[in-house]
Image (tube, rainbow, N blue to C red):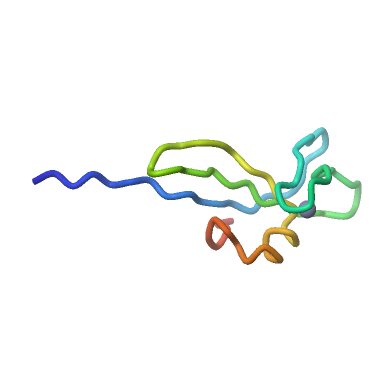
Length: 75
Ligand SMILES: [Zn+2]
């Protein structure tokens, strides 16, 4: 009997890079690069019922405030 492994949503934490134009899924504000601030973002690959659905971006702080909806972010 074959077992189908369903993919789960997952998140990674990355530095915010210049030219980033994503919108934070938690607060709705742009995830913007700020020179010298070394801000972090969380990028989540969201799976619905085992099928990739979308990418969501968060400010790292917003993601933690939202209690990490897609799990602990990997580095
Ligand atoms: Zn935010």
